[in-house]
Length: 151
Image (cartoon, rainbow, N blue to C red):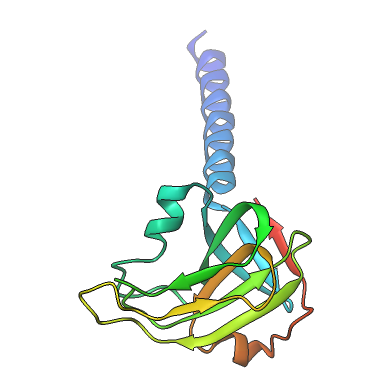
């Protein structure tokens, strides 16, 4: 009488473990973008505090990672590198995720004051993607390229 119960319990536990592993796998695949057939795992900065903090105070970022800044409207955007310790490429996209402007190999700002240079878009943008410096050149990124976003 104990054997059927043990088999049922074992089956149930195996099924439960399968669901748990499946859930972990789904959680591990977070938001990402694809640019020129290259996938980047991203963090999303969707509110003002997150956009202000951005990638500040980080000493490194994995090669296939980035940060996507989202805004509620299409407008001229300017970014600066205060307290940002890693050089970046800054890519500006319109409301349809079409690349409209980019700033490449932007150096960190070592100033302790507020005199860091700004890096503006040359056209209105609603989304801004920061990647490690040199990535845009390596991929051959050009104005007009489209960004695919998976959340």
